Amino acid sequence: MKRLWPWLRILGALVILGVLVRQLGTGAFVEGLREVDAGGIAAALGIGFATTVFSAWRWRLVARRLSLRLSLPSAVGEYYRALFLNGVLPAGVLGDVNRAVQHGREAGDVPRGVRAVVLERTAGQIVVIGASVVVVLTVPSVVPPPIDRVVTAAGIAVVVLALAAVVTGMTAGRRWIHSGSKWRRGFAVSLADVRLGLLTKETWPGVGLLSVATLAGHLALFVVAARAAGVTAPVGELLPLMILALLAMGLPLNIGGWGPREGVCALLFGAAGLGSAQGVTVAVVYGVLALVSSLPGAGVLLARSVKSHRTDRRSPMTVERVVETRLPTRYGVFRAYGYLDADGTEQMALVHGDVATSGTLARVHSECLTGDVFSSMHCECGDQLAAALRAIVDEGAGVLVYAQGHEGRGIGLLAKLKAMRLQDEGLDTVEANIALGLPVDARDYRAAAEILNDLGVRSVRLLSNNPAKVDQLERHGVRISERVPLLVTPNDENLRYLRTKQERMHHFLPHLDLIESAESGQGVPEALHQ
Figure 1 (cartoon, rainbow, N blue to C red):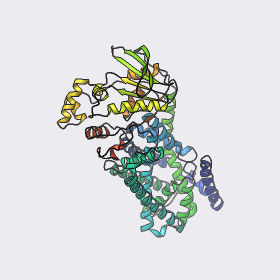
Figure 2: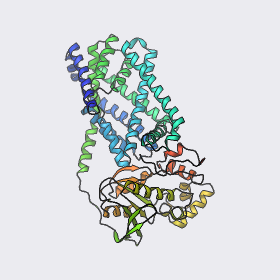
Figure 3: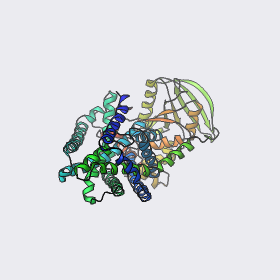
Figure 4: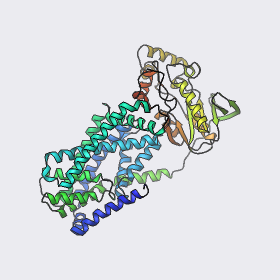
């Protein structure tokens, strides 16, 4: 059925367009193509820029709340590319699929990258559905019987699904986050992402406002299309029809956006006394102008293609492999590799099984004397180290690079102890480093990247909650196919520290929002994999 569904969507769009051609002829379609002029193209490019910036900004807000790095310029470029691909490829969503997967790969977390795009697009659709419900309630005379029932059903469905998600999250979310079932655990994390990405006070006002602004831009382009098609009706009469047409464009039965839009416009304009053929012409002009507004995406696509063909120039290795030996541990048997960095720092990697392959489970663990050796409860480092080693053995193959020189996020042991004292006095971990005149994070992952390369690792599934670590490793040439969360149970001593990492350093720690501070012996699993 999954293989048939894309073809059924295309077939549905073709059926709609075929019925329109049979009923109205080809004149309305041809007339729409003729009505596009230079003024309309200029308006489309200007309005398209505004709506693309608003949409990309909305995407960035959602992604950042999900601990995915995304700059506004990058978001605008990728959004343009997605819009162009949506317009020229069948189904009308392939550009968004590509955008989601590509961003997820670049951020080191494909599932979360996909969810960020789904949530961003869902926010826009919710606003369109809400506006459509308002139209049905306030201007029922312009809505033919089939459409009013569809809109009402869509509004009810949104409310029911939202309530179901809230109730499920409140009643089962905290239990399921501990579940041994991958599906329940994934569902619980997804609910946490919905809350973080759309429903917190830090996101919903901005996401809502940007969604309304985006809707206004789409309506403005529809007005331009209507005027270009010769429709002289007042804007106030056209807006309800256009809102419902935008709702129809969200139906999964289209070819590059074509199909339902033309059908609904024919129905609505005919019911409003403006003529079904005129409605199709407006829809065609809008479709052409929408495609024109996405043309900068073709430039982005070309630039990315050129960039991908550039030669990868890498610096020579600066770490030297010195020794290899067998190392039995309480978790399993590893091969220990010892390296010497160019500055004299000794580095170490533990390898279990065959890692000279793609998608190797890997952990780059920053040294932490207080956590790894003395089991400090101030941080989660010791628990993460143990969880990572267990996960690698359970996987059957993997590598852990123990990164020396990373103590205290790179500021050194004594400075870290001073920062811990300031945290006892009320500062958080970020403020403490700044108060000492030190960087918040001074770690360099060059040596770790070179060690992974020396071990023959082609690409990794990185055990990490830190998007900055993913970024640093990728800059040094490490291919990261997925970021695998490494969540451990918080305690009363480190909960504030972890929340600072979540809120100020954008670490992925959704379990902090699903459990309370060390109430009982039950917590999240030591390593939560998605």
